[in-house]
Structure formats: C-alpha cells, structure tokens
Length: 137
Image (cartoon, rainbow, N blue to C red; front, side, top):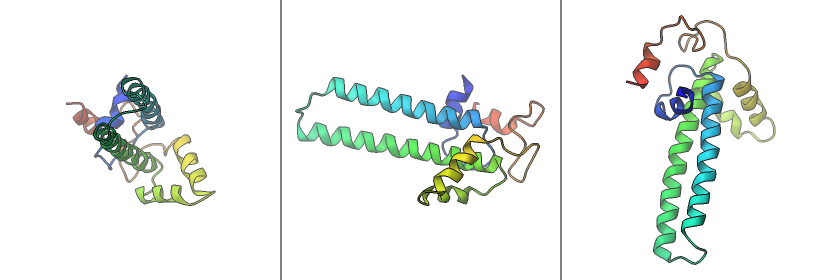
C-alpha cells in the first residue's frame, strides 16, 4: 500500500532513487484517478452547463493535471537516478520515435545494484532508509 502513495508524497523530491514498483504505482494511480475524475465530472455535470461552471471545471482539471505531471516528472527523474543516469535524460522522452523507447526501457528495467552516485539501493532491505522514512513522518 505504501507504494501507491509514495510517489505522490515525494512530488517535489527530485533526489534519490525510486524502484520500478514506485514508478509504475504512480502511473497506475494517475490513470485510475483520471478515469474516476472524468466519470465524476461527466456524471455531475450535464452536457449543457454554464460558462462559469465550464471554466471552473477547466481550471480544476488544469491544476490537477499540472500537479500530476510534476509527480510523474519527479518519479521519472528518481527512476533514472536508479540507473545512475542524470535526470536530464528525461528530456529524451520528447525525441520523436526513439526517445520514448529509451525512456520506457529505463522505466521497465532494474536499476543498478548497490549504491550509486544518487544514493543507496532502494530495493536493499539493509540500506539506510532514513530518507524514505522522512517522507512518511
């Protein structure tokens, strides 16, 4: 259960490392939340709503999307750190045709074993977990 909330609690943390489980938990909760939000908006507001209501829904949707994008960016950077790569590699995802394949490969493959230049191995049960513990305190 902690993996479902960890990426959201570490929304502004671009340091350290993240496991595949943490990253893909973000992806799953993002799409589940998006689906639930769209169902809720569709159910609560009929097709013909006022202009003010439409603008308010648009503003809330934009804010939620921007926050979710920030969470995904931070989780992606930490996931790249797990491979001992700089977070700037995330920009490769914007390269047409090949960039997103590199990014997907990095998100799906295991990171480096043991500590690297971005911290201790998050999968190691004996690693120093003080930084992760601070997220939940």
